[in-house]
Length: 261
Image (cartoon, rainbow, N blue to C red; front, side, top):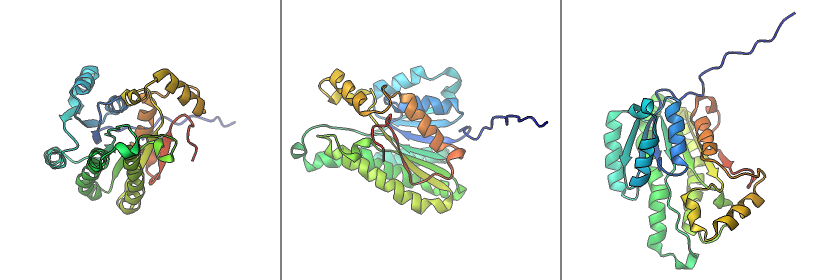
């Protein structure tokens, strides 16, 4: 009689020796993914401009991972400075994975925004992603392998007021995900997006009544708990892995079943 044996675990999900470029890597959702990727063996170049969060990321980094974490203080609104920083980083080695995560999220009625305020959100949330992707692309193309992950938002589906520039920027990332996936796929590069739902991070400070907002969130989610940063980390880890090599051009909502599209 034949007995079924379980196959030995593979390391297909490992990110060992992959070099990751991660914007907004020290933030509320970014830091958890940074630590997860370090545990998986990746070398993470973390771009962030919040010195307090950068210090926290450094302090929380396990000693055995510190030689694989490179933190760069960078204002992503400074396009010229960003290009110069990336050129120096690329001299040290190519990037296998790019995670376009950094974002700013002002909140007020549409008619109160100036055109320059719209442009400021676009500069950080979209233009920085364009620059990071464009500069990492040649090496990915040469290697015939790469992963680009854009962090969008479920706000693009509607239902949230006073976030017009932010929603506009996240809609742009969703569109770019599909355009890049179509264009880069022939080089073995996948491009996907995740859309986080409502997570208890600093971003929620724009809501005047936190308890009321938390109740609002749980009423809309199918899963009746608040999301954890590790939920985002797991989704990004999968999309960055070898296992996700046949998934591209997709937007995955990580939102506890708030939006089902």
